[in-house]
Length: 448
Image 1 (cartoon, helix red, strand yellow):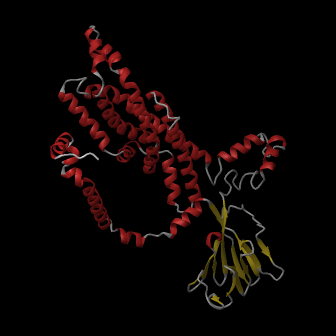
Image 2 (cartoon, helix red, strand yellow):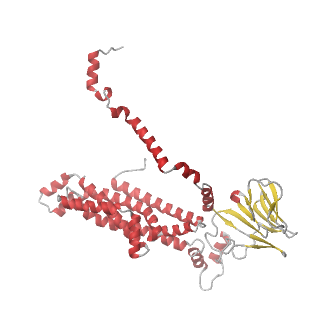
Image 3 (spheres, helix red, strand yellow):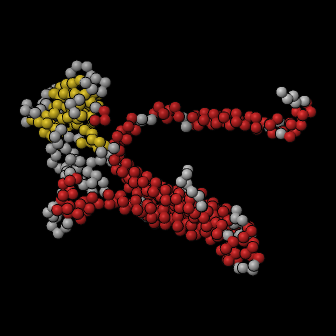
């Protein structure tokens, strides 16, 4: 066992003071950060009134909207009259103009049974009562008097109002019962009529039937091949509007590309004047840098609002908004990159008596091109997402289409379709951009 005397201990303390004489910051820095984080969290809770916000939030809408993203519903309405029960479907029903679904059964006694989800959930409508079967029980509701009346105890999944009774059947749907009519909402998984709408001659045909018609079937429309007709019906699908959606998506991509490209072309030469080591004029440096700060401090969304007022709604305003923002952002990034280049190659070329343009061409540009291209690609990738947002204020592209679908509060499956397309495009551009940046920067990400 080695014994360290006082002199040796003193010598060690002098050699490694960072371990024996730690500063206040080193000793209590972590604790102070934790306390500051806690204080900020408490302040944010008070400032935003989070308890009230969470209590007043309509959490039930989350499940409703998510279910509408992946499903659709059919709403037959059964009208009870003196002559019997008649069924009516909403206009533009997913089942077509004259539907006869197999889940609506006309019984011999004149009643009608609707299968909501197999035999576990069903509704039987007659002239005197409506029987709702769900959650392991059958509940009759009398409809012969002035108001619907539940016979027996009211289950938790039923709500009684003055003039109607509402039965919640979960994801499968719901039933609204009044004296003279019963409205059923039956939910199906999937997207209705995604390929062909109800006006198409290919509607409600199986995939094998459609393929057979396209390959060897008789012409459904004189003078036009079935293949051309099928593509035309898909592209002009009135429910999903594939043609318009894909056109707007292409507009968004073009807006992002054009705005980023123009911003890079303008920012590149200006960055040489803004860099202190390239242009020694301090006034020019500061004016250009403040100009870049101004352009990027005004949000892209604000620029889009200004330009839509000036040029009207459309992709021109969107491209202009991205151009102005990217001129400021890329100008700052480029100028900072120029200020950090190695001056030795530049000084060596200058010592040969080369002109300023040649000095920049061979002494600076080879150092900055990979970095500049990498930064530009990243901004282009980011602007594909940004172009979607500014489209919502009238700048064109799929953003406006997405906002219109959300405002109706009834086309959430269309919203899901467009969101998935946007995610796919962002993923493709993100992957391509990362691959190009890795190649330009000379890195290999295969092992990561």
